[in-house]
Amino acid sequence: MNTSPIKIAPSILSADFGRLAEEVAAVTAAGADWIHLDVMDGHFVPNLTFGPAIVKAIRGASALPFDAHLMIARPDDFIDAFRAAGADSITVHAESTPHLHRSLSRVRASGARVGVSLNPHTPLSALEYVLDEVDLVLLMTVNPGFGGQSFIQAVRPKIRALREMISRRHLSVDIQVDGGVKPANVDQVIGDGANVLVAGSAVFGQPDYQVAIQTLRGSTPVGV
Ligand code: DX5
Ligand code: ZN
Image (cartoon, rainbow, N blue to C red):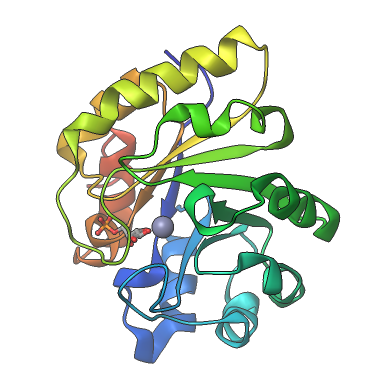
């Protein structure tokens, strides 16, 4: 179980890229907690999105924390650029870097909150010797690369085991789940121990962002 307040982090991957700043402002007004930025390079994942210039261009559209999820090879080369562009947290994939501890140290040195991500198949043992260094663990609940995929149920025991690992060590680390998060499975992932929910299509694919965000929180918005 977890007792932290739940945070909703809409992923702009599912936003209208032609109106990105407006979309970021809209989910901010609709009650989002963080803005999730999916950065893809066509190497680590089979898709391309955007780099620091776009992050900088939309930074003024919201005062919320910008949460950069780097799905890129050689993340060390870009950490400072994303930080300078306005990222408040920077998450690197354990699978993307041969020297994970060094990459996480570089994020720490940049001044950003430190995140580490695991693909669905990557065991928690990858975190054994770095967990004390991070503020956030992002557990992928789809294979990274695209929005709108189905939640992989097999990751649920990993969420529970991670929450136990964090409690056992008396750490304060966010557990973020990313991929296929929908109103139908939020109770499950929260019960498993997640406290930050990334949602792309479940927010930007909906007609009313406020209703979408409140529905993910499990409550009905005032006036609806
Ligand atoms: C996938 C990204 C996710 C994605 C989530 O590689 O990391 O953030 O946008 O999209 P949905 O919520 O539609 O699965
Ligand atoms: Zn993501």
